[in-house]
Amino acid sequence: MFQLTSDQIRNNISSLPQEFSVDILDIPGYELVLSCTHAPSKLDAIIAIHSLDLGPSLGGIRYFSYKHRQEALHDALRLSKAMTYKSATAGVGIGGGKSVIIGKPEDKTPALLHAFAEFVNVLEGRYIAAKDVGMTEKDLHIVEEKTPYVVGLDKPHSSGNPSHFTAWGVYIGMRSLWKKITGSTSLQGASIAIQGLGSVGWLIAERLFWEGADLLVNDIDPGKMELASLHFGASIVSEKSIATTKCDIFCPAALGAVLSSKNIPFLDAKLIAGAANNPLTDSQDAEMLEERGIIYAPDYVINAGGLFNVVTELDSSGYCPVKARERTSHLSPSLVSIFDSSRKKRISMLSAAKSLAEYRLQYNIGRRQERIDFHKRTIL
Ligand code: NAD
Image (tube, rainbow, N blue to C red):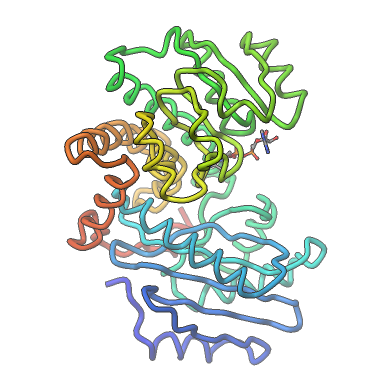
């Protein structure tokens, strides 16, 4: 239902003005990967759709000055596949997609963003764009001037900033797993080390403070650490030791690849539950944590609050924050069931989450039942 035929794609490409040059890249295991250049605006972009099995693909636009095209393609492929797994596990009727624009910050002009939007239109809604690294709210509004296939804007009837939903999802997920591990229904008295006090990390810290947790924090911005100390009585920990500091729960909420075979042997926590994407350096790290008896909540399951929020925008009735909150609340039972399955099969939670996503994809579980009326969305 969501796939386009190759004739449709070729027709849509040929309907673009002649300054556009679009190639279909043959990448095994991927639904569709297109590369596009538009010389007048200096646009050089790739859209990768990993899967349309459960619904139209959705993923952020990453604007970055990649050194090589291959590096940009690698990012688009890796991140679109990750979106497939995240969406399948969340059960939101969405496939995995991602776009990357290769460019220097000074080349990000309205003309380039408009050309990118026209490239997005070729896919007739099979790729829905959102904000990612290198794109601002303002940039997304410029993209939206030429395409309806954009979500997450800060305007009425849009889902806006996802951070509150992501933070709340991490908090409820952390609490559910803590109950599984200790039997305690609250995080009161638990020591929780938070790495990164940005949009999400700060909101997590605030919730945990009111729950009665003891916070340990680190951020590269000393001002944020001072504020956390002032407002939450948080202890400041150095950048080098935040991951291995003695605590009950480590909450990565800054960068990826903060855990690896180098520091996992020194971790002194019972649970890892945070917002950061890809905190593990490679998938073997999950097994290493498992061997050490440390529970790792898979990033793409526990940080899916923002995804639950943004897909609510695609409802035929329009965006509703109450529905977005209800959807995000499903994250807790979902994490608990992945935890139970991992204990039963004696595998890591990451392996259990992967199996769940693959099972759902194989049997089309959670597939979107109807097409999204993008025209109606824009006039809501
Ligand atoms: P942000 O940019 O608002 O905050 C990141 C924070 O980390 C900043 O305060 C920054 O100073 C700090 N930081 C950067 N490098 C650091 C380092 N080496 N050590 C300690 N602190 C460091 O980002 P965010 O939106 O809060 O997202 C945090 C993480 O969560 C990212 O990995 C992001 O991909 C992921 N995530 C965010 C959302 C969301 O809704 N914003 C959704 C899913 C996943």
